[in-house]
Length: 291
Length: 291
Image 1 (cartoon, rainbow over the protein chains, first blue to last red):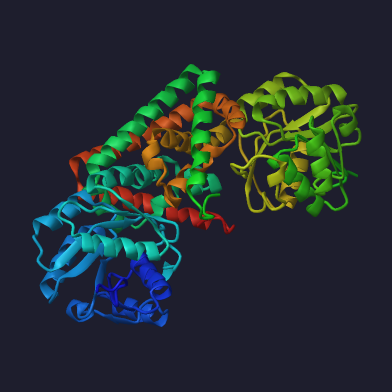
Image 2: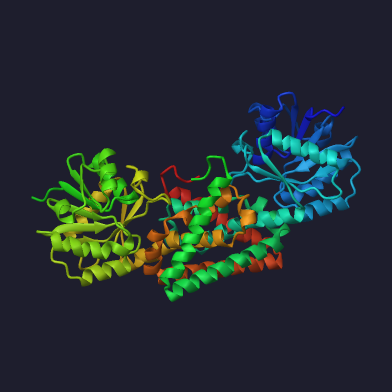
């Protein structure tokens, strides 16, 4: 009989997401042991002290000894390499998932590795913050957040079910889709806003910037994100990002043309449409995060 | 001897800004009487009940009877017309200011009127919310916020000093600049982010929009703003807005070209620069509003 919940959960990478998963596991899987694996002894000590993990180690082999579920929470550019190391040290087939923000390239590359022990399921929780680091971890980060699972025809059903069950129990809303579809959506709702916010910050003069208020601050908040995390995301999803930015540029060009014509009626139509569309977002969320 | 504080303050227009000014006056000018003037009896009743104003009226003449300071808090497109009506009903020279988001066209038009009683000083508090209406008024909206005064060579020093003193006592940081300079800055830090947020909302597919999270929500929050308030702002500042949007488009084009080249080093430079620049904003504000 297959146990429903993993007895030991191993989290590789103790940042904002890894730490928040640890905290959520401690709350929702009270019977499970949570092991943290990080190259940083400081992070391990912090995570143990804050009861994010039961135990921690810098050695992958030691950390994965009795793991039933392994969650790779390292930056996108390193996930494949980490998965290969996991394959090397595992002694039995084990479910492995990740939290990477792009999926198409990664899942393809991992499947090309032909792992014998790593039973991989691609995943991406749509939750985060511009504040990186385990210090900002929170147990409720994933509550009511969407988590995308990106199984393919090579994904084992048992692995997929375990990962889906895991996120459901953490209070997330799990959606299944292809890695390709995932990257299109992530480009539109996450990578494109980030690129636009960065360009807006860059194109605003310093003389004006010093007077900026809450509106400017909110519009550009995501541009603060850690570049080291975002560079591999942008590069691995650059085709979708380029086409999302191109669609945006067309809208912006049309908007500018309306201003050049000074057309009140067209401007009204454009602003009303955007305002209504943005207001409708609220109904899709039951968290109190929309202001 | 000239009294320092106005004995009676008349607020024309009871929306978010007018209501917040009322609340702030009640707190910081305890010796002054606050009169609200609105076409809406409902708003007047609400404002009296919530102690935003001492008294209210729908009749301009009655409301301005003993006013020492008149603050026009109606939408940008109506300020000139309201100022003309104020000139008609005033029986003595009185300081009149406004809170309009654009200044160049407005101040020029008001000066062309050649008022004999209205002693006008253009002003714009950089505070607000996408939530319009007196119901969202707050007494601390202007605390530590910038307030731009836009005097010209025609502005009377006594009027300018009274308005500056007024905003200082409300806890705002008053800056003086020409109406032209004001509109350039406002375009960059307020009108451009709004236009970009609206275009981002418009260019994102509905299929993706339903999965949007806090990042997308914050980036596009200002797009919810009331179109009826924003249309006249955009139209009266369209030259500056068009050039700010053009500078933004150049940055966006360069960013897209970096993605097309797949250049990690250029992408790193671009994202690092934006992230640092955005993080520096915090130091310019001592409110707890930056997240």
